[in-house]
Image 1 (cartoon, helix red, strand yellow):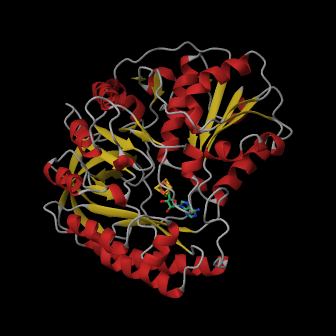
Image 2 (cartoon, rainbow, N blue to C red):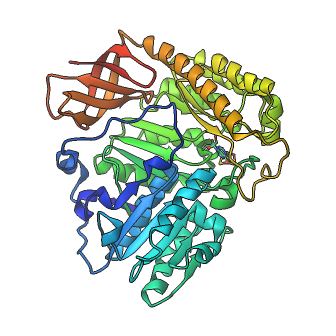
Length: 491
Ligand code: 5AD
Ligand code: SF4
């Protein structure tokens, strides 16, 4: 397995060449971040260490990312691979010799968006190499060449280890190259990972998924589950701490299914505690947890280790046992709610968020009511809610009793409205509390700073001090709404 090390993005070229396609996301009830303003790059440069200088070369690249945090982080690694080979990032696809799309296919809309992007190059791709990475690449494979003959590279995430080889082939004149194997048991570890987030660094600890949820493309697009050794994860965490990061986010489609393939044989909770113990690391987040592998030990770790953030994203998908079974979710409503009660009755307040799908085939009005009543029972701090979207190669694709689109939309609106009320009420209970915030945004015109609490709440606040970006500050909460709390910095 390759050695991983990180270089500060400033030393490479700035983070602009990896653009996030935010518009592809479904409307979500969860908070949106305050835009970063000011000049955090210079403010934080000293925190990151000198890094490794890479000479500008003739070839430039641009990568646009769709979808989840795993994709965001894969793009950081792909950018690192390219920059390590002398490619130079540029701000727009028009300027680039190599244009890459790191794609998502979790819902149809996400896939359509990528094909629309590819369509832009139909008459303009002359001399450029256009590549498709990620879940849509894996799902559609060589079909992409049929639909967009100007594409030269198609590579799914389970084959990213082969990327340098594929790039070699393109550089030596290869017209069409593919990396579509799913049988790799390796994880994607890079010599260089370019870090595009200024305050919080991602570490993928487990790739792929061994569950088989009826609606989900991920097991097909990302392949079987593979965990990294705890040794390599900890080494990466230490390097990040040395580079000045204080917050780490452990990533995996089912992050808590982690099982150390190394001699220690650690479970997820052991790794979580060990990362939180790395000197210099003040916050550790993790996402996404699968309810089946969510244990009391994880709750105990959150309760006893302040550096482990008190936020758990625990997607339920439906409140109806009948639908959970049809979705092949491997737990019942009762079992799920029991796990919620471990957290709600525990010693430390833990924010809980979830994903919910409405309009799965056969979802009756009663089933939907069960999802509504689950919102009341779970009292989530935020949810991501989706209309079911049939996907290729999933077992739910051909299920009978499809729910009409307008009925799905109606259910989604009702669900979101109920959740908005719950969130507002929950946020209001925070008024009067003082919370620690990691400042990650500034809106000078409005005189407002922004940041997140350990429990992942967005906080806007005023302060009499300057230069707070990257600082942990105490904020007294004075106001609350559904997606945001507001307050003032107290010393
Ligand atoms: N349709 C709608 N939502 C889906 N998700 C996954 N697959 C689908 C689908 N086919 C949602 C699930 C998952 C989240 C990342 O996306 O809620 O947790
Ligand atoms: Fe998809 Fe289910 Fe795996 Fe999550 S656990 S990635 S929803 S198959």
